[in-house]
Length: 187
Image (cartoon, rainbow, N blue to C red):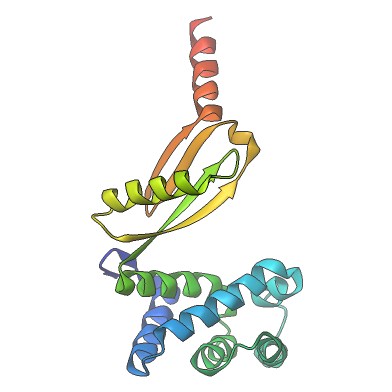
């Protein structure tokens, strides 16, 4: 099941689709997206929360009780908090990161936004970032582009861009690896 390029297959897609419909009815898609992004950030930053979400050792009641405390401290409330509690009570909490990603995909699609993951060796200057954003907007047919720029010195130079299912790797590291491979084939 796909909705305009957003994959909604499996449990994560069904839950995300239902949540998006509910949020749309309540005119709260932006608030839910922000709350889910905040919770995802908490999961990324806390190994303990990640363990709570992923581990089948905890009962549904234990997960809901622990999440109540976390959601209260994080300021996540309303539809998003109720959704996270529901997912925990249904023993589907381990799929929550995929549900959040699917919801964000639906939200981005509705807003006409495309996300691009960019890896560079050194931080981009503002003029380079603007030029990259403009080039990616042209590739996507004029859609608004949100850049997630990550610095990784191991790419040596150049750029790696992941836009949806497409990836362009123009890094020096990849080019050097390619040359190394060809030299091994010859000699």
